[in-house]
Image (tube, rainbow, N blue to C red; front, side, top):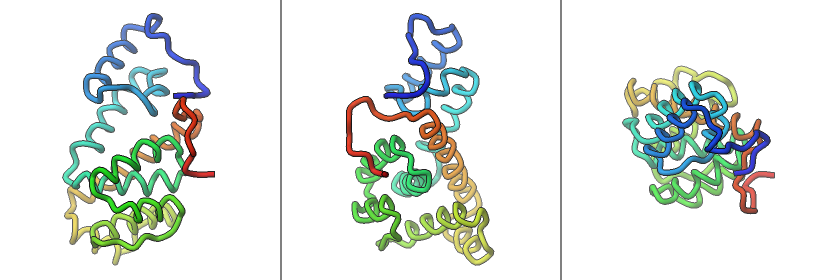
Length: 182
């Protein structure tokens, strides 16, 4: 990935950076995205990657729904790298390509599943108003339950953090691609 930050030379990493790098590679197979920034602060990287692994792989939500929440976040922040990484994953997890494209364009999608519609509206409402009104909160609570709703909000929060990191440090894939946002 390209970045405003200085690139790491693995040979000159501190012991703590090396340990975190090895931990990230063991859990994810490679290192890309915000981890390249967070490694500049190894302790931050360690905590962030653990939270990220939970938010991405271990919540009670089906991956299709968590990837939808990630795409809503990537579109809100217009995070190029986050979108490029997660749009193909969302499609592979079964999210309709028309939904994906509508979100990218900033349009409200037509959803096949009520859970998807609800996640979209929860994310949009939080990003636009910074709150959830009682009717939407009650609907989300009835559909997802408290524990899953807390995890959903965690996904929105974590991936906002990811998007801010990627945007601030202008982190993009090294190879030229058509970027999803202007």
